[in-house]
Length: 404
Image (cartoon, rainbow, N blue to C red; front, side):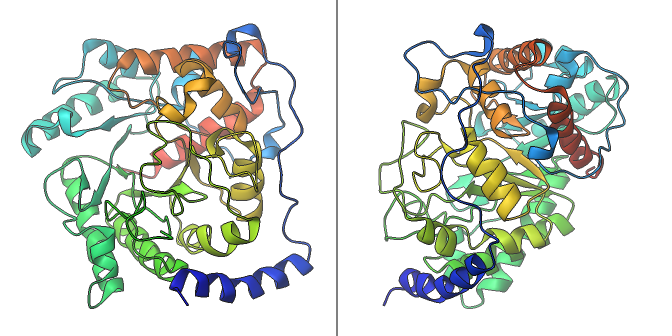
């Protein structure tokens, strides 16, 4: 019996017990919301999950902790957008946006880095621009530093998740990798890592295993190692991001949401007893962010990608699993969202679903500007409800306030 199947068998009994207590919500799509204003709609024909105002209670959060003064709709929207830029030098337009308080953070890629010293100088410039803004909490300065093949920076962590999972002492190796990632990023002035991956691969050589990004095919092993990485990295001062909820471990080779739509027809039992198993321990460990997948999971929502699904974000992640931290999208420009309009329209849909941070990672500052403008317009029009919008921005601000 494979370890993944064994994990299903063991955890299924736990699931049946939990279900008998009435703790699990009914799976399936949420009621169809009302139609948004024309500025927020995707071009037809589009299988768009139309956003509607929703009470702030739909996305549980801690008490608001924002310290910024009263803000314009653009500033409030900007508190939810992560920018990216091309090349080695941030454009002046991005600096102006940051000084205006209209950016939550910046994500860095390999093309932005020629050396640690060069990146540190850029980070210092971005931080100085932030100090001139009306929002005093530090920017979220992030990258993908998983280890193995997925690294944007030189240095730690060196081993991939798969190599850690096969090491003589995997838990110690995962903690060492988390500490290494944290020290590496803090040394350059970064404060968020888009890692670790908590996907549980189901077949050797599939999409997530082929690049060594999964610790194991055993969900309990992934839970243990992912949580060790989270704890160690966050102890070093860098917020961790658990991804890609509810899981890409069953995606076949070649099925990449960056390139096009992906549907994963797993049963609800499989999702909850395998793919989601690593998340409760990571949440209990205080993981700062959770990134949602762009795949469609028919057992939870037959229509919408997870990051555009109120059912997945609000009922499954926040409601059933109790996550109260910051939700972040995968790349807004992903090919899986080709049918959902431009970056602004996608951002509005994601915000309506319950996503706090919009990751505009096309290395084009215009993409982030488009997201901010669309969010602000939807907020002013009432397409996105202000209390819920503000609660999301406040979760992001609370995260920023706790980082260097």
